[in-house]
Image (cartoon, rainbow, N blue to C red):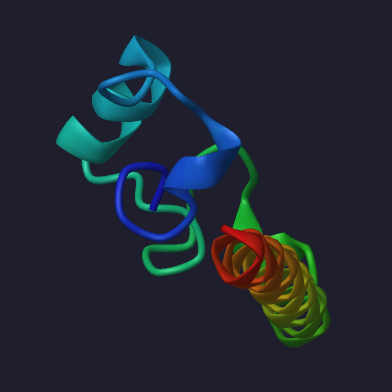
Length: 80
C-alpha cells in the first residue's frame, strides 16, 4: 500500500521495517483481519467505509493539485 497506492505521502524508497515485518508474517491489515488493528472486532464495514472515503478524498485532492500545477505550467509556456 505504502509503495504502490500513496507514494506521495512518504518519500522513503521502501516501506518501514515494521510494515515489512507485518506483511512478511501475513498481517495484511483489513485483508487478513490483523495488522496494526484487530479488524475483526472494530466493525470492519464502518472502518472500510471510512478508509475508502479517505482514499477517495486524498486522490481527489492530489488530482486537483496536479491540475493546478499543469495549468500553471501551461500558462507559463504560453507567456514564453
